[in-house]
Image (cartoon, rainbow, N blue to C red; front, top):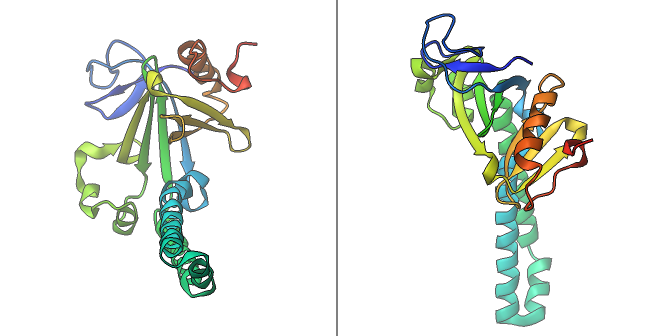
Amino acid sequence: MALSCFCKKCAKEVLSGASCPYCGGKLGTPHTLWRVQRRPVSDWISWNAPLRVVIPVLALVAAALVCTEAAMEGLEGVRTLLRGATPRVLLLILGAAVLLVFAGLLLRGRETLEMTADKSGVTLRVLLPKPGALCLLAHLRSPKLAARADLQREYGLLLSEQSLRWKEIRRVQWWQEHSLLLLYAPAPWLRMALPCTAECWPELTSLIREHLGRRKDLRLPDCFLEQ
């Protein structure tokens, strides 16, 4: 895969060089770039983001109710609580939350993930090819963003951009079945999930080995170790 650079003036990715071939402007740091399309409603990572907040909150509420009953009424109070309507109410809340998440992800339509990796770290951008009003509202964004020229990119409207430096990463996992590179910072918290293609794999593997391979505070999956 050829290295590319981003031209801020053209808002395009161009082949690596000293200047942009379209406008002549100065280019930034060369990087490996790849893009993947996804539908959030069928994407595990898109479900993971809201549910890893909803489920722990409901679990904490349930634990707090049980502890309160145990402290006030003892074991019999806990039995009464569990035989009552409380478990059903919590399950109904969980079901409603899942349905709301499903509806929101369905309305998001299709997204383009644009990912870059260089000597400093990795960057993940979410682009919307068709940024309609409902789509933007489902992303919890104002429909007015669709009219902003500074957010227009070659492959859609720039919805979000997240960067993670190599030195911040504390755990790496490789989900082979879905070709997903999972980056954690700190170790218990998933910060970034990168869908990897065969085209980007050699360069990305080389960068990971170079910047993470000698780190003593994390262990790389076997596929990133030197053969």
